[in-house]
Length: 291
Length: 303
Image (cartoon, rainbow over all chains, first blue to last red; front, side, top):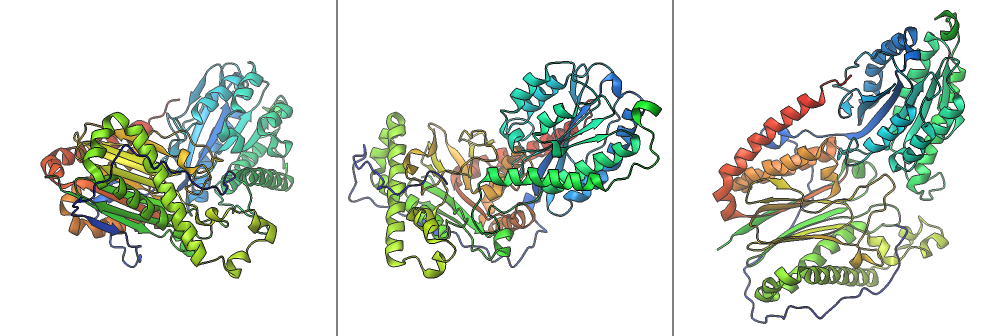
């Protein structure tokens, strides 16, 4: 509460209502007791028809499905994403309901489902690649949907979203204009953002413009690395994103929500960089030579 | 003769149990002569609002006292409402804040801040906190008469109303909220101007509910939230036996949902409910079917 000050409240005593002296009321006043929580007998509960929702988090995947992704890149990405779903499910098992929304962009932008899907119900639809890289249009569509009136309309939504961009090339449209629109969105501002460049053509500077920091941008040059990086980013960002960080620091000073989100984004960058540095290249065949 | 009835209940959130906080919510209802009031309040519960469990109690009491005062001349009030509802509601809001501030001042005078309460702050930090803030709380209050309903709200929380057609609606217009929104509070210096309100004239109310945000956030969708209130309404004809089920359900929602405190307060028109119970039951069945259709549509792949 930044706008609290002590003042004498003003009460307008000149109502349009005149007091009635001999008013006869037969009234009942009841103040609610606080439950002792001792008995949880839910057997005959007609209210169980509406399920209880845990704190929820939406993970947005923005995936480049342009023609240059065709072949091994897209094949590997489909396989990794199918494998990833159970891992993300485990992240949410404790006390967070994770929902997933997948936006693909090529010549057109398309959502995999018409709304974010709870991870328990989510099934990956294998993607195909063709067309150009309309990244700016994807940013605009994301901006449009990241709203309480659209994809973020769940009452149980408790955390800022995770937004994960994957691309292998340079945008073919005006991505800066789309990004400018997206940057005005509060959910984007407070969301955890990470990006993965696939192969030599992906431009890390553009990806850093999207995430706001080079620490949250990683690069995969082979199928093995792609699998590793997607898992690192998706799992780490979901874990951090669904963490209830206290609004106070080590010295017990209260922090603003903006500070908490900034701390989460910083933590994500640190953890991604630590995990990436421990990965091995192995005998993987690079996308741009072998594939 | 209209017969209003009601219930209210508050449960403590699991997160507050873990941190040894007392329940920050308060709730109450009141049935008067030809009117009824449902109130809930949610104390902020953060560090500087260290007496907000009392602040929410004062907010509930302040509201009922303010409404009682305005209904001392019910006939005049109801005669003026259709043309002057904005001014009357504004005056009620001012009265509530005035009552709340008086309660806070009285409590603080009788119970000065203890050394233990101060110990959590540096002297500079403590000096910077306005005394009203110790007691900061939200407030949601709904009032109904023979053929009109209105509500006032400051901070988070929700109203659900079920009028004659048996459909559950949220009569207050809620604005887009984003992660860093600041919650309005009865302790704000300009609190009286921070209220939102609604007025629904010429409509008979079957039931109205006010709830703190712990209830709303325990639902995955707004449809489910509204359907929940329709189900409750369908069971109000057996309130005595249903009361325990509601209490248990609120406890379950707090424990397995967002772990926040939850308060729900309800007022309803017993005669109209009896008259429209078949319609309400029909809505419950319709809602269940619509929920199944929504789920099937949600799981349809688009690529």
